[in-house]
Length: 390
Ligand SMILES: C[S@@+](CC[C@H](N)C(=O)[O-])C[C@H]1O[C@@H](n2cnc3c(N)ncnc32)[C@H](O)[C@@H]1O
Image 1 (cartoon, helix red, strand yellow):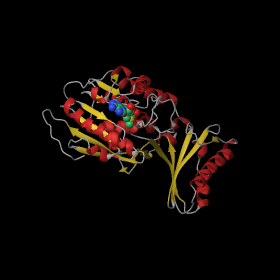
Image 2 (cartoon, protein in one colour):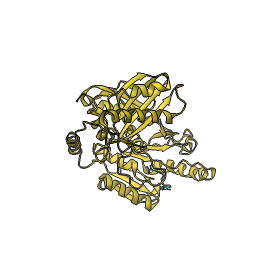
Image 3 (cartoon, protein in one colour):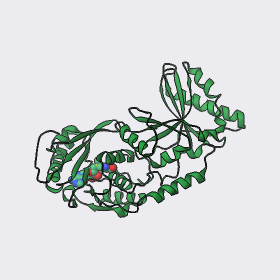
Image 4 (cartoon, helix red, strand yellow):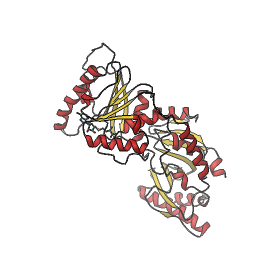
């Protein structure tokens, strides 16, 4: 069927600051990188290719496959053009449909209007051809169509992911301020850790960094646990092809990692949540959990990666207490982590200055709207170089 086998534009969205990492992932899967935007990377392929992309990409948020594009300078152009497209070949009359959109055009001043018109055009077309129409609503558990209307040009994309890919399915207990799974994967990939040396993650919270680290070390496709993807709700989806790909990816994964992974947190309930999340992800046996202050974390001898994601503090009172914590992270790096590469992921650069060590790299990231940095410290043995630079 041409819908599944024809080459199309594929747009893969990701967090700000991570397109270069996503582009690297695409290249290792042998997909071309056509362009890199602020929060997306464009590649090309068939709708069938999106199965493997959805299962394999660690830093992708949504994988969109172009359905059609047309000029639309007026509000009425949207419905007029959309109702002519063969939606009955894509979405089942007894299926479920949801519309998302990004709209930046003088033609309409209300995104909801564009969403409703898109939904109306699709269901009217299907009703006319099939005599029945799909249900529709905001849930992203069925077919998802994304409208991108920029000035006088509309692009209509099939969202092959549905629910964002950050929802891997293992984090049943999120706790407060968890890092998104896709961001945690991007952070681990940015450190260059390859699973051969130890990975130490004090202040692990719900365990996202340690779990993503384990998945990376095992070379395990992050999507294999997910039960639902948007592509499953498009007509012509072949479940046996999907199951075969998922099984092949599972078989290709390693059974164990060479380097140990250590995850600790001062709150026993956080460690318990992290342990359960790791169990759901199937990597509990690879992570040594312990409830303790970060300063008490047992750091294996030799070389490795140590990474902390401390709180950044929003209220002043908090910030004062955190200044001391950041200073002590610097002391912990110097006294306990020699030979390691140290990393701090934070959204507060003033606090980062309290660490008192010279940064080797300052990698920009965004945690939602908050501008963050992944700060890298080279903790050479015997080196005690201290500077005030953050
Ligand atoms: C921002 S959260 C980490 C979130 C984590 N990256 C995740 O994805 O869930 C910071 C964590 O540091 C822990 N923490 C705070 N002070 C600590 C200390 N002195 N020693 C160890 N852990 C501490 C908190 O319990 C919290 O879980």
